[in-house]
Length: 362
Ligand SMILES: [Zn+2]
Image (cartoon, rainbow, N blue to C red):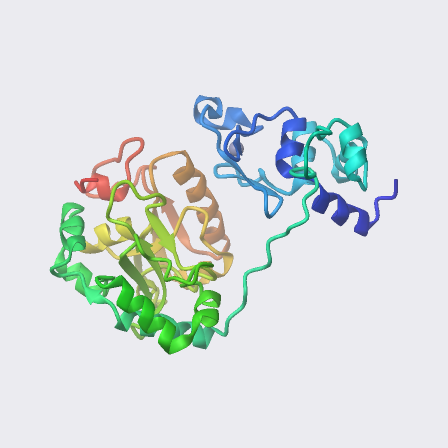
């Protein structure tokens, strides 16, 4: 069979990544499987680290930077094949392009299945809608103007428990949603649903996404204008704990410190850790997650000496190595916290983050 470009796209579109993973002998449970490079993980990756996105046809190990991609890449890794070899393996295994009848014959489906799912995958997720960045900023600014100060809200006690105090809430302009319905309505009246969805603030049901995540951390630019934000739930049973604004993250949290002047920067993971260090008087900058550092951000750190303060766990260390490489390529001096460098002479222990290290309670 020809390995033409069209055939490969058709192949990728037609096959369920879950099915391919299973055919490769991987045990998929709740959209996750154990990393093929289990030896790189603690406990042989007993708790699976690789996630599948069925709608996008992609997989991603949250520890190994090289274990991610599409179904072809998955076959390459598991069968130790090159690209062409992987395509051939898929074609031999499933037959292509495959009709429903063929799928049944191949044993990929039971003849009793009413519809050819999950093997024949028709729906592909539409790409993220684009929005004019100026309009997006305008919406974010209007949103923040509708919010309330932290003082006097349940979030105040939550922050104090984490040893993040009023001077820091005010300096970093944290806000809370006190009257969800009012903010929801106010935004709709001002901008209309379609634009709000494109901007990433509203969900498919037509509502503001931050019903449970009511504590807002703005990403302020050098003119103190919020250009992005992360939202946090203060209830312990909410998953996920944080909800990011959809779309591009324009720069790291607390970017105003990256002024090109010589100095130290403590680079943290997530707003809570960053705020913890800011509260203690450290020059701290944050990234939304271990994998969210972008190549183009490295230049922002010019003339700084960076200490990486990501979580003391496997994902944190893997993330640190990636960020370190990107910063070093840009000529930035960087050390990893925990490798001889400590804060106030102490070392963090396994599983700790900056907030727990400074006495923050969960
Ligand atoms: Zn892995």
